Length: 244
Image 1 (tube, rainbow, N blue to C red):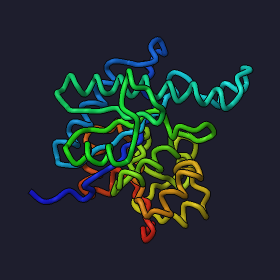
Image 2: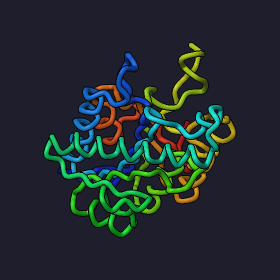
Image 3: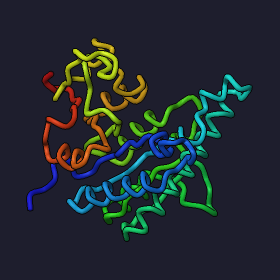
Image 4: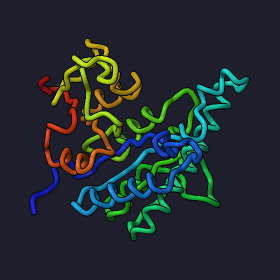
């Protein structure tokens, strides 16, 4: 069997997608199970998987500012929300006998271990899925930024931004029917076109550390495995030398 194109990936998942379609549950068990199944399939190919998951299904710090919650306080609440989602994902993976460990940016000894890049790398080398909760541990930084930071720290060869869209388009495809998708694009062109790949801090971290970014529809059947095998029809790859 040939070696995977990307031996170690950082998968950035949105917490918002965990909410049930009807909005009745902040964590939908079927969606969570589907996430775990896709992660298991990637791990089975020999790819080492680290994960950062958001907390928007429970609480988003920025949204609290309009409700009397100071931004820093709200962001701390949001980081706790990511821990709830991280533990839920760990439990879902455990039901599939997939070894997974949660590492937190903040000390929570009764719940999980504290993140260090050495511990994360050792677990990944052992084939364990590593779920990196608590964001960056600092307010005013998004989970996109946390994902880029952790990707650099654990030595990821790719950051996968899992969305509901199959890549990066010239415009929002839900609003502009003429929008066209890029198979590959450079960091520079993303910036010049003002394409919203990730927030500016996250994007700069990836660019400065030469970490490719892959944007894909996580919920399209088979898309994640296909993209990690080099299929450019189901995702957009952002690199220094990418060609649009």
